[in-house]
Length: 160
Image (cartoon, rainbow, N blue to C red; front, side, top):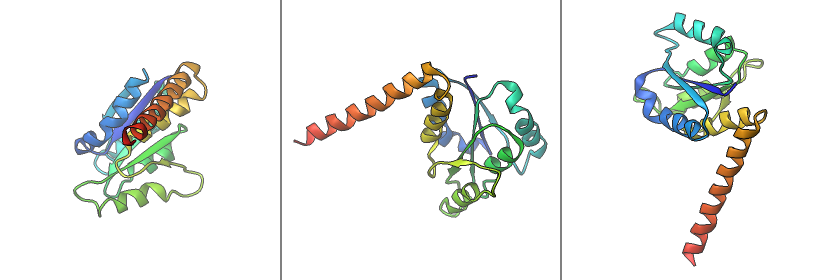
């Protein structure tokens, strides 16, 4: 399976989450994007979390700001790996509430957490999870990391 579910609590999170969408598409990984609010659409959240593994997803990336319950609630319902993206939103306390809400999960309900607004890293981590069992994706990750290395070396040379 090479499909990642990308969900967010509201449309205002899309500019941040777009980085995960873009990087996954660059690795030729299918993405399905949706808005699933833990507080405003709990029935949708439960259906999504309980059934995502039957819909062909390998990983779910969940972005949320403020109280940021979405990643943890999805993790409580789904057997899939969940990557949480804390989003610095208009109602957050400088993003710290989102970070801590996603980071401080109880034992038995893990959520891999990336940096505040770190959707690009969430996409890369999702690709690495898929790449651990898919050689085509693994090769793309290796190539991507080589390109990062080449950019740093070129930047270093530019300084001299």
